[in-house]
Length: 81
Image (tube, rainbow, N blue to C red; front, side, top):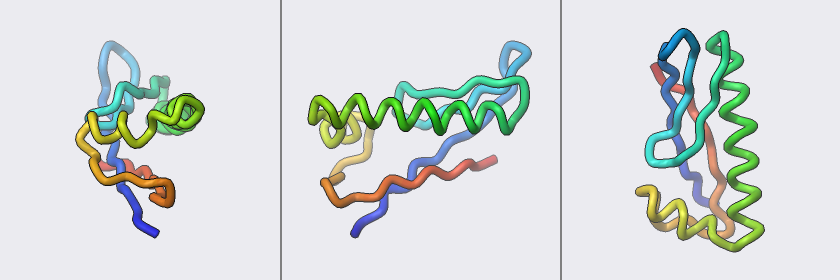
């Protein structure tokens, strides 16, 4: 099984923490670093489910710069500074 590592950065922006994954239109916002990270995880899960229901996950990830994702690819999220 292959693993795709998605990295996220959390920044302080407009009086709140914002967590984003490069290339994907998914974000988490919170009053604390942990809250923004938790919100991003939930947003990513929701995004993945919406893509899978329309069988668009592989195409959407390829368009975001993550080619070669297959049905058996495991997605892993990492927060970096």
